[in-house]
Length: 127
Image (cartoon, rainbow, N blue to C red):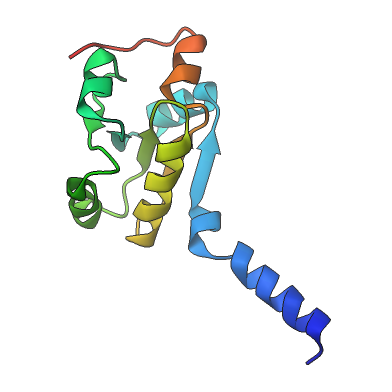
């Protein structure tokens, strides 16, 4: 096998990895519509104090940087959709990849996080 074929094969297998195939990034409008159409888990992966400042209604808070998050990821029903957000999208991307690695089949990441959600005028609730 020549190096071009090997590089192509490696590239295809990299982009077909489950993390790329199963994390779906959605705009705030699409995220809202998807949650309404197919309810599931709604995870706010920010810190407790960020969550207390305002979060999506019915969101469960589990800081992605806490050991508790990985424990939660291990017990979620992998057949249910999982909607994930943070402040601006970075931590939720990390959390989404971890959820997929734990076997979650449908993980939806809110592009731009709760900041983008609020810019659209969508509601948040305070603890």
